[in-house]
Image (cartoon, rainbow, N blue to C red; front, side, top):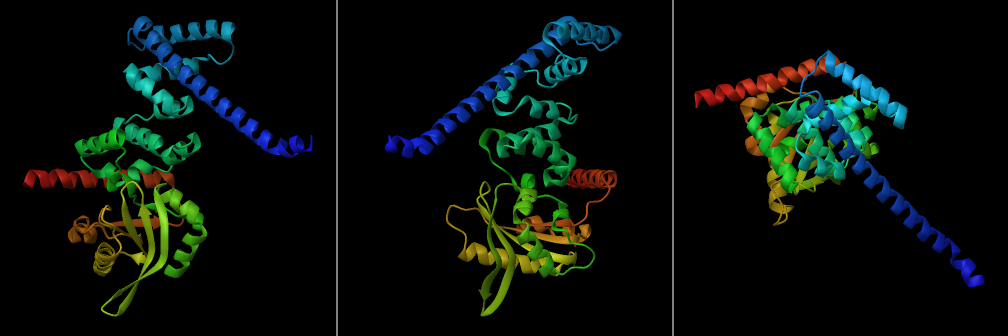
Length: 347
């Protein structure tokens, strides 16, 4: 009897694990089945009843169907829910795509994604959500923080965006343009008014988990003030990370103030040293990220930093008005794409 009593905690833990695992499997199966049901309902209403038209007749049909379904199955079948079903079937018309999505994302994920009007933007969030396994709350936070508009990929030609997203979807390959952002939101650091680069670095390390969440889940912290020696002179890399999917070291240089041309040479030295002494044979060349409080766009353009594997981004320690930020980011995107078109015309 005593042996049984001694084993009870272990047995309880094992049984609890089995129950929790079974519940999760059931919940996943139910969610998957419900998502397919919603898609079939939306398709049926849209194609066979509304004939792909949206008019008063359509409104009446949805109202009537909702009333009948609520009488039979309860309040879950509101007009709003039927419109979600319609939207779902309109956005994802291929049943094979839906079958794949419903096994990876919950209905709440899908319901959020279907109301993103821009197809490329929607595909970006969809693929990143699948890759990094975002919760529905994180997905909504990413959308609210304009993650897509802050990535370099949003400023590229449409074909480039599609190609990068296809690589991400089919081979789980992340391009640097999908990884790096501008600006970075560092409001969680609690920095106000004046602060030094050391204060910034210390605050980041104190909030390392939040910093990595903002940077992206594939970043792994390696070192602070990484010392490198060149010709008996010592230099220090502020922060050194490793990115698992890109398979490369990422050196981060923190600057309080504006970006200056001299910062390029400093980062190039760091990257060449890392490539010579730290890069493993199966890794890709290291990438440098210069984070500054103000980015001189013309400096960045003329210095052609991409050719040196260097990224420059602003960071914000206080969040601006979201509408002002939205307007600013859209202007940046349009300017970037206009420059690309102009270069293509010249060539």
